[in-house]
Image (tube, rainbow, N blue to C red):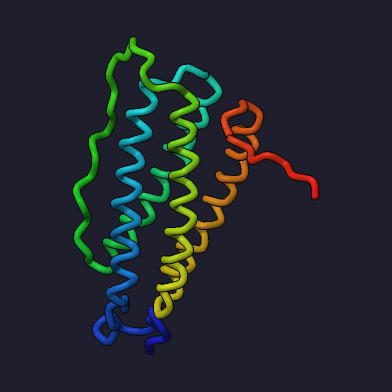
Length: 169
């Protein structure tokens, strides 16, 4: 007996899990995006001087990006979709030059998270057929919003977020 993507009974009568082309693209594109962000974050870590900000970036790598990469790779494997090439394990080099400031790295990170929020919403909106895949994107969106909220607070504390002037009417 087959109910959606859940099968009860013998394996011979099981249908492989179904996935639309759009959902497959969303999974693959989200994985590629995370690979890119991992590489960029590793690159920027070479320039970050603020110890608290360094911890935030490192936790973002291990507790958010790498965990989500593992989940996306697992989903793509489940549907037998070829994985894109993984980025290098690390992008480390000695950087004595102060050509990139912590504030610039924060700005890149902040705007990147804003883009990911849009990307997650689009993936949720277009992944209609496969409930578990859509729920994965909902989970990613919730995590992204939580990280964004924390970054807003940190950026205001450091004075790294440009605040529009307050106008009294």
